[in-house]
Structure formats: structure tokens, C-alpha cells
Image (cartoon, rainbow, N blue to C red; front, side, top):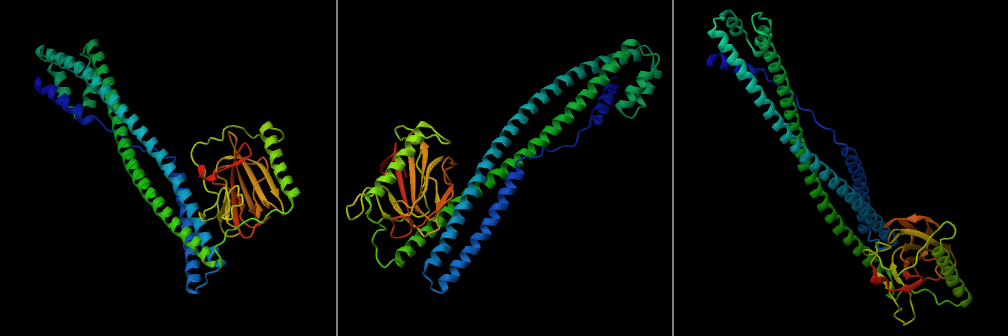
Length: 414
């Protein structure tokens, strides 16, 4: 009878089937692909800009045209860095999601295996009881039934034929039904387990690929920042070389004191309106504290006049960054525009942005303003093109930091 039980056990083993694996679709791939397309386009533009720079260098054209070409490349490099950073953020989110999926699947595999083990134990017990019943049939001489069972080619036919044997008792029929039910449950559980194991393999492959892409992007950011710094230094050096003198870009001394007072009164009034939240804007008052540093308003780090005085000793309430006309001027932090004026004197075309807690920044002498009062802007967003409007002796970005309207040292925030 041990041989009979062994035959039935082997049939059960060969009858177990496994489901083909299915793979989950990754919803992040589209966004990552879009970022890659944008990066490729910027890379092509950077190459075009470099070719233009090389062409000008061969002609020895150390002119404003060369500076403009450098400025274009610098702007593209910054855009490339921003896209790479976006890609890095997306990859970090994808890595975290994939890791969460892996952890969840591993837990499900453990639970599924425990369920299979439980069902297998139930099946083994029922099967042992059935073998005992077969032995009893053999002892009682019911050999014709055994012949039917032993000539079956698999467990399915064994169970089917066994049900047809009229001499099997009602208890035997229930036992057979129970065996069939448990066998089906085990097969489904094993198929589900295999599906989860295949999904786990795919998730782990995706995780490794995402981590590799993340490392490559981080290396690209480092390389791009290095190239950006090199081009910025080159542009600043060329601007310095093009100057016949090294004197500061000083604003002209205000000869019309009434105009000067008028500008300051308008600024004070704007702060007052913003602090009350009247109209379409709402400003702030506070101690001027800010989380983190402010970003520079332009790519240029070349200072032609610092805070608080010019080299002549005359008061200068901000920092002047040398840069060609038309250079991007960007917001130093998130905020709302509370002043946007186009004057032909004093600050010229200028903006003031409130950043909360009484902190604000001013950007003066622009050629064109791209935002207006009440507009919400984000850190690094372009808000103007630099120039030399108002009382200015050359193109630059005059940058001020104010706390509750009073000018303070910008270097404490940059």
C-alpha cells in the first residue's frame, strides 16, 4: 500500500502548474523619458552655443558679441542643471516607490508561502486518511476498484474515476471532494507565489537601473556645474578685459533731491500697502529671517560696487553685479511682487519682491520687466532682463536686500 500512496503523491506533484509572470507597468517612465528629451535638446543647444563661441574666438572677436555668446551658453548650462536636478528628484521618488513595492512584495511572498504550507499540511492529512481508506478496501478484497485507480495516468483521472466507483462509500466521496478542493487551492497559491517572485525580480532590476541613472545624473550635475563656473569666470574675465578702466559702475549722483525723495516715498507706500494686505497683494513684516540662503540675481559674480559704500566712500545700499544688457535677472527666493516701476531716473526699471517675514529684495536698472505687482514668483524664476536704465553708467544688476523696507547687507543673505 505504500507503493499506492507513492503513486498518488507523484501524480499530485506532476499535476501542479505554475502561472506565467506578469509585470507591473511603471508610471514614472513617461516623466523620466520626457525629461531625457528635454535634456537632449538643451545639450544640442549648448553644442551650438559652443560652436559660436569657438567661431568668435578664432576671429579674435573679444567683443560684446562674444560675451553674449558666453551668456547664452551659461543660461543653457543652468537650464541643463535644473533639468538634471528635476530628473534626480524624479528618480529618487521612483527609487523610493520601487523599494516600497519590493518590501511589500517580499512580505506578501512570506504570507503566501505560509498559506501554501498550511494548505499543504491540510492536504497531506486528508491524503493520508484517504490512503488509509484505500488500504482498508484492499484488505477487504475490493481489488477491482484498485485496478481502476492504478491504471489512471494522473491525479486528475484518479480522482475523477474514483468518484465514479459505486462501491466507494459516501465518506470516501466527501474525502475525494476535499482532496480536489485543497489541490486546486494549493495550485492557485503556488501560481500567485510565482507571479510575486517574478514581479520581485523585475522590481529589483528596475531599482538597480534607477540607482545607476541617479548616479549618472548626479555626476552630470557636478560636471555641468564645473563647466558653468568655468564659463562664468571666462565671461567675467572678458568683460573686465573689455573695459578701458576698472572703475566701478556707479549710479550717477542724484541731482534732483525731489525725485529721490519721491522714489523713496513710493517705495515706503508700497511697503505700507503690502503690509496691510490692501488691493491684490499682501506683504509681510517681521525680523527678516529666512530659511536658507538667497540665490544670486544673475549668473555673474563679478561685483562692480559693493555694500555699503562705493570705493569713493559714497553710500551704496546694495551690490552691483556686472553683466551684459539682456542678461537674465532671477528672483532670489519665492515671493510676491510689491513694486514694479519703469522710471527714466534713479533705479530705472526696477522690481521689489516680498519674501515673507519682512524680507524683500530689489532689482534695479533693468531693460525689461517680466512680472508685475501681485505676481507670485519662485526662486530662480526670471523676472527681468538686465540693463542700464535710470542713473547708471553701464549695464549691471543693482541688488538690494531690505528688512521692513530698510536696506541691509546683502552678503548676510547670499
